Length: 108
Image (cartoon, rainbow, N blue to C red; front, side, top):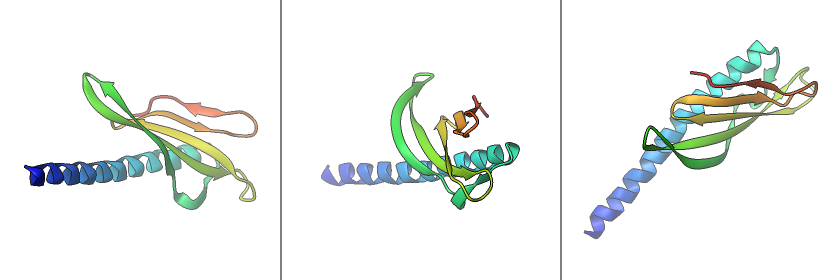
């Protein structure tokens, strides 16, 4: 019986890791396109996970992931951006631009 519990925990850990990689790749592509649309450069070509919260959608438990990234206007400065991914959709994408926040709502 203990072997099954250990295997279930390992399987859950592997699922969490693989699902996190898929989510991160999806969010990173959307961030990169959003930066290109707004004529800014996404720095380091990377995003990092800030928070993960469980949430329900259609009665099913899913994970809502909050990512942060940096962008530059002229290559010499750094500003922050935020993206929230939930259930294979981008719920929120924002560039904290010095002239005012640029927000894009739900993306598919």
